[in-house]
Each structure stands twice: as C-alpha cells, then as structure tokens.
Length: 169
Image (cartoon, rainbow, N blue to C red; front, side, top):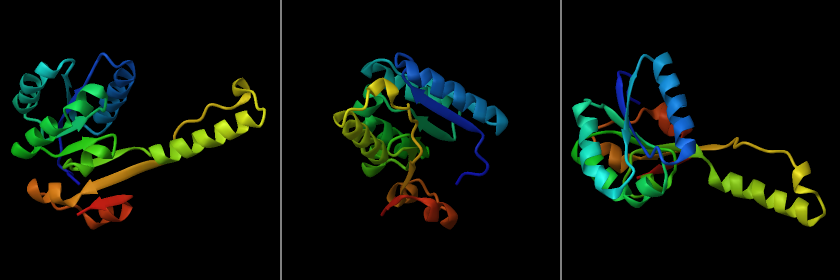
C-alpha cells in the first residue's frame, strides 16, 4: 500500500509483556525491509499527547498501534491524531478500523472462539485439558477502511482490496 515507506512509529505499552515480543518481531522485520522503527511508549493516559507528537518528530510516515487496554481506551484520540496529521495507521485488531482507523491485520478472534468452543466440547466429553494440544491462530483478518484512506489521500491498490476480509466503505 505504501511501497516507499521507510519510517514507522510503533505505539505500544511496555507494561504489557507480550507486546515486547511483538515489538522485537516488528523491529526484526523492519531490518529485513530496510525500514526504521521508532517505538513510542504509552503507559498512562497523560502520555498520549507528548508521545504521539514524538512520532511526528521522528518524521514517521505511518503509525502501527499494538492493542492493549490503554490504547484501546484511547483509540479515538489515536485515530483523530492520525487523521489530522495524515498518518496512515495500522492496528492488530479490527475494531479500531470500524471507528475510523485505516486498516488492521491480526488474529481472527471469531476463529479463535470457534476453536475454543471445540476445546470446551472435548473437555465436557471427558478429555483431559493437559492432553489437548496448544494451538496458535491460523486465520488472520485484513480489514480496510476506504473512508479513512480517502481522508488520508491514499488509494488502496485493487490487489490489496481483493485480499481483504472486510472493506468498510
């Protein structure tokens, strides 16, 4: 979608342990793609204004938001900032895209919940939880908001739209 993208700010909460793993993976992928990542830490509500401004000082060309209770609670502020500063923003959950975010790519929670239901069924039929295999998500959803793209002056390539699980118009 943004083939010349070089600098990405990553909004994340270091108090959420699994986000540290996510950040490391993102930094590793960025190195392979010859991109620069600027981690932007938000731990408290009062962090948002200063930390989001830091993304602009980094001259970020896009913003990646790792979901957690803090960023989820302030999603309106994040989307408003991104739109005002014409900063394409990607999320790892679909909900922010339904309220104005540009796009999301992440675990399909519908598929995870369906899988969990089969585990419950197996346990209720006598299976021992310790004997059940640990599964990782295998289905991921791509959601694109065309209204947000238009507000940012972006044209979404048809090939990306065809791959989307949901396109919000």
